[in-house]
Image 1 (tube, rainbow, N blue to C red):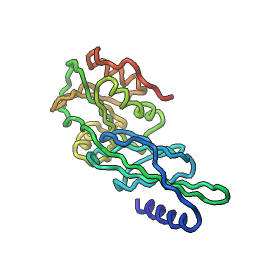
Image 2: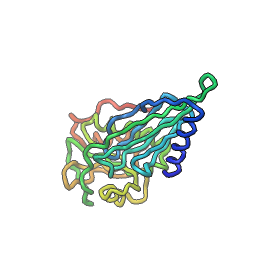
Image 3: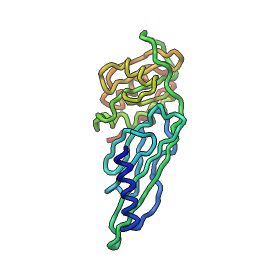
Image 4: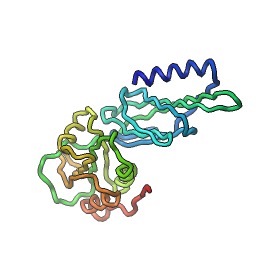
Length: 230
């Protein structure tokens, strides 16, 4: 993080001497729930330097200039701040663009860690909780995890995707129950204390995830349409 801040400061100093610069807004959500995955975009997809300034050590990835991360659960009620610096040559002059974005982390946390007993009772709503190592997320897993929240919410239920190194106590309780398998998925009841309704490795497709959700929730609440990402 210190290295990124130093690069940012040096870049701004150089731009003041050798280039003109513009301020602009990053495109992305204004708020996300704790543990929710999000993406940020800029007008320029080339030579973009992403600089998360809060929280320190925010883990993220990027593809084709798109910033990808998940809101740390311990940031609930706080804000995530991110800069994006890009440069392009226009009429023999370097035009430096500095973009900023702030995301409010708000929303309900999952119920307390469930007991070890299972429950076969039908439920109208469930929690889908996925424990992952975000740095090791594969493209195949991303095709399941990116559209997971909209699909589960369309079914009238709740979802959280948490990183196994998030230090929030409730997250670490789920990490301990997930064992060594990543990504690991739980489907639980919504009452407190919750009960595990299903648990296992993240299914291979979003269809498989929603099939398990719809087997548990009442038919009238089942999701009818699943959005796919190819």
